[in-house]
Each structure stands twice: as C-alpha cells, then as structure tokens.
Length: 194
Image (cartoon, rainbow, N blue to C red; front, side):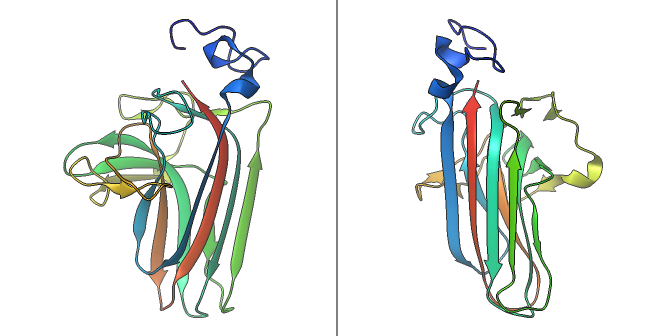
C-alpha cells in the first residue's frame, strides 16, 4: 500500500484511507473497424492523467467484454493482458482467462460476450521479476517477446493519446487470425491501483 493509506484492500476501508468505493475507478475502451492485429493500452497504472492515483499494480473487481466481426470468413481473438516485462525491443505479456473472446464461427456478424464479477474480492495484478506475484498463469497464457509492445513505441489509450507502455499496464490485443473483414470491440473494467 502507499504511505498513509489505511485499512486493507479487501475490506470496507480501502486504499488512500477512505472507503473502498472512493478508490474504485471504471475504465472503458471501445474500438471500431480494427483491420489488423493491434495492441491498445487499456489501463496505464502509473499514468497521472487517469482517474486513479498512479501506482504500480491494478486490482480488478469486475470486467465486461464484447466483440463483433464484420465478415463470415474472418476469424479474430481479443484479450486483455498484463505487461510482465518490457524494454526497447519487446515485451512479455500475461493474458487473463475469462476476458478472452474468440470469434471463429461462420456467421457474418458473430458476437461474443464475457462478464467477470469478483466483487467484493478482486484479482491482484501486481508484477515483480517478470511475473505476476499474486496470480498464477500457465505458459500458454503468456506471450513472450512481443515486438509490437515495447518502450520505444506507443500504444493508443482510451483517450486516443499515444502512451509508452510499462510494467503492470493492462493491454488489449485484437488479433486477426485469418480471413477478411474487421472487428469492433468494447471492454469495461472496475478496478483500483496501488
């Protein structure tokens, strides 16, 4: 916890000394017409331009995800991951189960939707030494050496700003697997940052 914070993160007294409800932030990210595999910055945990107090780790309470594809032949995957390690060349990212969407069927406007609700509990997404410290992900949920995410380039955040990603940030990957068409998606998350 930050200096001067009171109480625990799971009880009625949350970060910053106030009630937990005073620390919760809602984030939303929507994108229309994605045509190629692209990463987006969902939550910048150290960013001072957001509604949360800058910190090093997000704690997720509730999340929703929805995606729709425009072509019957297109196959897409969309997911949310945590940056585990990053440098000027590439990054390692751990993807969160339950927030991944797979649009692989043959209907033209196929839709996929997920809701994850943990309140009053949460998933602690703290990172140290290149891995999550309070959440276990098997190797199949990790992408190592992803060159599209690095400190030498930026990702578009929910405000449309270009932001350099860092360790602990949450990213969205919209992945074209095969076929034509585009993808529309929306993610929402309720969280706080420590």
